[in-house]
Image (cartoon, rainbow, N blue to C red; front, top):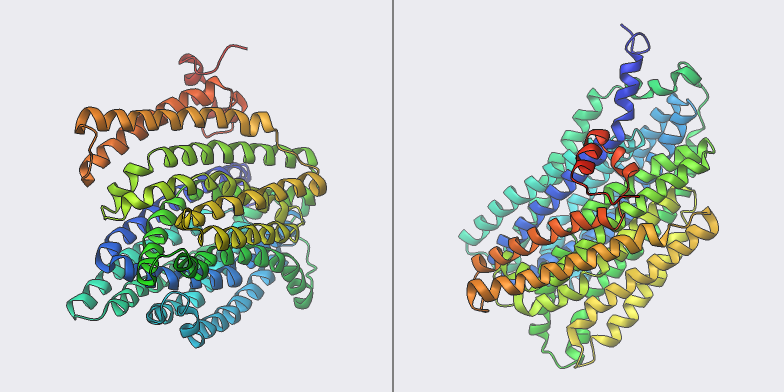
Length: 561
């Protein structure tokens, strides 16, 4: 029987649950992906050491810049144009957008790969020319991930985040399994450390190929009419007219270029650590070889942990784009404000406890994961860097809000200001002997704080939306501050009682970390209810929300009105 027949109500119900299930699956996949990535770097760090990881991370930072230039804007542009076309019943145009995007990504990915290879020696020179082989090994990944991004943007326009999530898990599993096998093979062949790093990083390319194969198969089996049925009552089989290819490309460029520029600026900001850190540390009196090792330790340990919390936030940010685009297309301002308000509150509720908790127990987290001599030296740096998690989270959400509202160019100004603040702060602070390497995390916090502040100003001025400081930020802040204090207190108490104040091994630090995290999570879960950081309406929006709300009320988690 036709999808537009008696099964229409069932399909509509399935469509309404698509956003919730997509965010949950995508969020879970992001967590899994980052955990796999972390467990890839831990044994890789043991194999390569801090010098080898400096080559590895230098290549990866160059790749990330090209990745952002090639893929940051177009997937968002595709998802937005697909969502808008569907909302107007232009189903044929959706197919045309997909085909054009695939072609554009093919060209962009090919050019990016050629540039990475051609200028690999120049890029590697910032840290060490020995990193060149890693850059060449990673270059094909750019072409493959561009094609993957075309599929992801298309699916996200249908509010489908599951294919993106699963493909990312496949990429990470390939990176972990193949990368470790290749690195161990290179070691068995007695190859120099720079070649071992190149073999290990090539696992990323293999993993991305696996993710691309999954997305391609998913597209072959995809039936868009199942998800377009919610518009059939209004548009029937759809509006036949389509824009010309040139007009569609112009629309894609109008959305994608500003987003790409803003995202690339932030990637360029991360490259500042690669290109500035070593030379400025040498000015402060640290020898060149030691500066390379410090860069390797910081980028492997601190930055890897810093990149974990945002994976919980990005699903919240990404889902804004198609939803807000639909609201604007239908002129539903009140609904848009409700979506944005919930998104910022949820962002703060996730980012703040991560920031306070990570800062409080960095001393135990790093030795648990990396168990290297440099872990204790890196812990204070992570304690500073952790506070950038909150600014980064709000920045990501506000970026997507501005992009979805058609203000793609405004985040560019925010990102440029943030990158400039980081460059100046890093250049000055890292050269001061009394500050030294602390200048790197301090400049990162400053970078994201400046960019976030400007974004919130632009949201208020150009979109007419101002998040509630009290409800969205202050209440989660109070809960998170107590959460961090509990984590700090429990960790110090556990170390004193269990290990006489001298936990040194991986097992001891792991036990302390688990105890501190468990206590902090329990306290935070209670406080977000007692401080009204989460409301009854928020709970009702969850799957089985009424049932969960009933349990919460029986446990007296909500204060009496």
